[in-house]
Length: 118
Image (cartoon, rainbow, N blue to C red):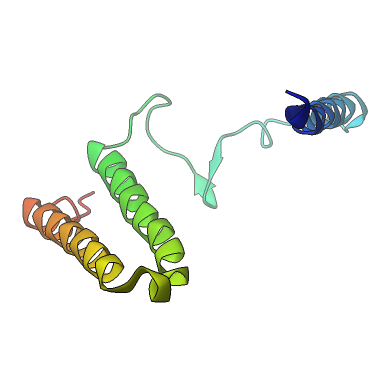
C-alpha cells in the first residue's frame, strides 16, 4: 500500500489546485453579463434549432468507429517496437489483426456507415 501513497498525494494536490483555481476564478473574475455575451455561440455563427435537439445516430457511429481504429494504432506501436523479437509469429498475429480490421472496415463501408448525410 505504501507504493500508492505518492500517487494518492499527486491526485490530492491536483484536486486541491484545480478546486482552488476554479474557486478563485469565479470569485475574482470580471462579471459583465450582457445579452450578447449570454447568447449561445457555436462555430462562429448563431446556433439554430431547438436547444435539446439530439445529434444523429450517424454521429455516434462515426465516433465509435474512430475510437476502434484509433485503438488499432495504439496496439500497433508496441508491436512495432518489439517487431524484431516477435519473429514470424508476431508478424502473423499482426497480419490477422489488421486483416480483421480491414474486413470490419469493408463491412462498415458497405453498410453505408461512413456516408455523412445531413
